[in-house]
Length: 142
Length: 436
Image (tube, rainbow over all chains, first blue to last red; front, side, top):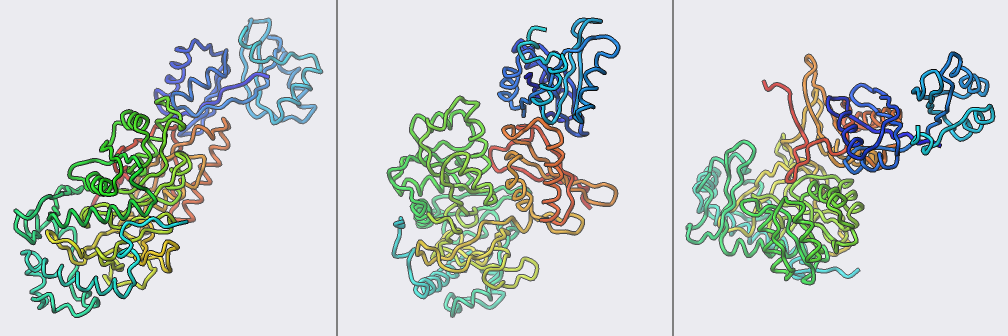
């Protein structure tokens, strides 16, 4: 299962930049990024080429950073591509806590990332329906 | 546990004998005081002209209090009781207001102060076999030289490292296998946090004890220091007006600070009414020197708040114990009419494992109301990555603070290492309210 790096930052100029500077130094590629904004602070969620290296470089520089399993699923980049996946979740009463996506090859395929309560069980369900769940090495290659 | 002790005859002296000694020494002190211009006029005003006018220890209550302002007004010679040629050292304190105060010491004064510090050191179980690194500032600040002299008298190997320069402190600790240090609690936490960054493993250090003082701190802060550094930390209490360190110290049992009653008479008063409080109640500590020739002080109002702990310590010392200092009567914050001590806020934060060791208390105005902002750093190790747990944490701290201080604060969470760290006395309170 893929892992997402979550980083605590204060909501003020220059903090996001401090993170991207460290990742650049280490040659870590960012696949996707979102920010959960809670007014005076936020949690930056990063999908990167090497999550463990990203976490170490961030914590070594004083950041509070944690790794968390994330369900990254390959979907077709065409109308209904995401819907097919979400339908499985709806049928199984699975709540999506947070989600984001990115296109890998336009009109061909994309990756949809979700935080769910039980990522292992959800991965089993969607795999059974023919979806491909990506792990860190898959994401490293895209 | 066998109780290590430096001066058994004094430290285990029966109360009755101790009080007889106090009375004799109080008369000597009044004799010294009558030689200073300041006390001459003060004591003559109340009709006290001879030391023999002090008939019992109770007569102490007839004497006027001495305040920090009195010391400022008497600067530089008004409280000097002997010829300058007999004084061998002075320590001044600039204070935050800029008006200095001064305490002179004769050879006897320095010698006796040194004895007091030696008693404190030995009471914690430290011995001549220890390597002692003194991480407090040398010079006019009494913490450096005070502990230095005491540690030498005990026979420890003393490293006069002074304060700051964390990299060098750690180097000295490794090269000389320091076993005991003296520092402020905030500096020890800073030192601990620096270990990883300096590439030092706890196993490379021989540290086993720390004397912590010069800064009021909570029991939680002590425990945090003990757990993070895997040492025993002993609370030290002193103030420059009462020499400096060596006034009161914890023994191996860590059940409060033994105050050396052959050297000081202790009173606890209500800072508003100035009346003595019953034993055990919290109030302002008032002290009278009993062993100081050059600058005797009668009923000095320390502005430190604490209480006496009743009952006997298992160590058997007869000198009574002070509870840790709760704060200062002058650092009490009044927030929308409610009295709040910064130490209460620190207590709550240090009990919360998810927050780190640095914090800041900020007061400002929103309209006509005071607003309390408590800024805390989150602890990197316990960060889960989930933003909701941060909101819960913030709410939990806010609720806990409200139940303790009765003021609802705004709690802000900050990144580890983002709040200012002070290597000396940490400045934790910023009051931005306009002065009237």
